Length: 126
Image (cartoon, rainbow, N blue to C red; front, side, top):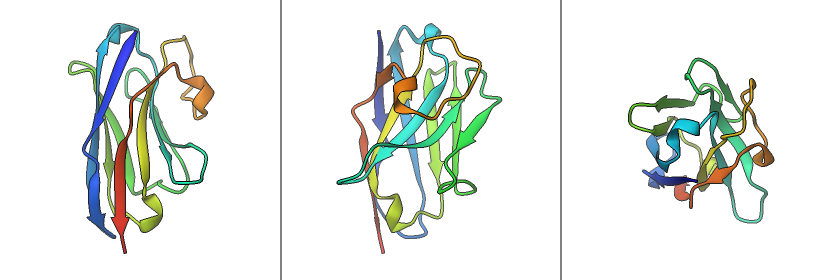
């Protein structure tokens, strides 16, 4: 089992920045790809960013490319999402996800991940 706890969400004005953190506990050595997803009211959960086990490979949704940066610190069992130039359309609950099944790809679908955090709210005002 892997437990994931997100933090760092909040209310920010458009153009501002936030840094989300996802602290993992439990079978952290088995964690493979880590990802961030988000879900706005009335919408499906969507991919935001993902990072490989070593941190050398990252992938981003087109809507956040150039503004968001995903990183991980395996020594601290923590994944981060630095969000800059935030827009009102970035408003959503942000979820951290972990995959422990073997993979050689950085994955972007919700079904690809095995464990999820409880989410943290990000609200961007215009």
